[in-house]
Length: 232
Image (cartoon, rainbow, N blue to C red; front, top):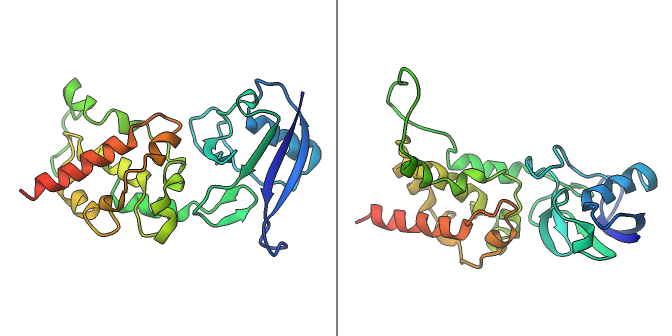
């Protein structure tokens, strides 16, 4: 079968504004969108720019807007989209070229929540142990691959650019509820700021978009509760 792949192209070095380009691509229904993009770049237009790495849904580098929804191109099958497919760069981040966006603003907000283990206790002889129940408390939020799909699906993130965004909040949740960490209060103070967790309007875009199936909205609600309880 053939599929029509419609791609929003933009090279700021030569284009005044974005434009749509269409490509007819021979595909198998079980091909992925990433396979079709590879075909275009290898056989039809080598100037097409896209980002990818593992191509197996682990690294998250091929996140893009596919048929109006944030997805990973390596996880979406052609058969689930039909013969006409639109592909655009992620919203809310500056386009470097075509489907490649500047991820630095996303990672800058990620770093603000201090996404690493913080403790004053000296390292034990073997390992920092915790019970299965303590580990289960934050199991879901350890699955984040930092693809930015959730954050760039959030209308609050598009609005002012101040909001930390769902991915940064997921990273904060992962350490705030880790029994080995000692900086929970410090992180909660960051999340209680005007750019933090209370900017979330619970529209569930992030949860619906997450390719890892993380219950992001639930995690955000738990962070809100933790901030409120810390004040009592």
